[in-house]
Image 1 (cartoon, rainbow, N blue to C red):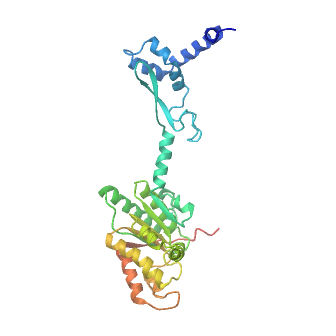
Image 2: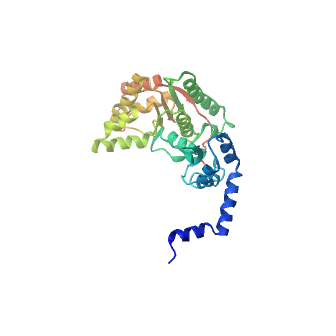
Image 3: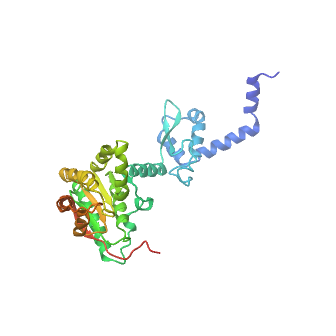
Length: 314
């Protein structure tokens, strides 16, 4: 029986295999990046080092660089998905150091941005909105609202501090108030500012259920302490005195005291909202308590109207 060592030598020294090796070696050494690396480290690299490292050099040459051969992160062809090889020299041997690729950088940034937004019961399309996607062609009030949102963001960029006042965006149903709210949340997230966006009708229903599972205080704390809070569809339904005073009143009182910016959308003007909040679900008229809540809203936000046609109609 032929010894294993002799068999290996015979295979390695086979003319076809030798020719293929020489071909691959030439292809590797003709690569522009490989040539640049060899020139930069010529005082440390000789033929023996190159021959010893040809496997790593081949891996480098056949990899995708700057995502040029990858359609997306999932389609990455490299040994380490989301990373591309970089040539390094260690102990007379050429090796590879894998660094994050552009596609993964973009994906990581998107994930980081998404973590900056916490939404409660908000539609997906609203939470994916961008300010540049807001249609400004048909109504001047939309431009005014977007400009007000931009001023808020620019003040933070210039001063490094969030403005104390948010916006109270009011207007008819379907004019895009929620969309602008979501767009602004994404603009803030891009600047690493955490925002909590809450759809008020569902939120208040959840608060009732939270009494039973004893998570009420935890959820109220989560909302009231958000760096930026956005309350969507405020006043959409009649509410109980408990929801008005103990839930919303507690949240807004804390934010007023801590000077935390709060944004609202509503179908009501401020005066209309105050009238709406005066009457509870039971029909009780409580002007003082409604006025107390409205005072907090006026202190922590500036009213601005959004007019236009109902964009939800087909």
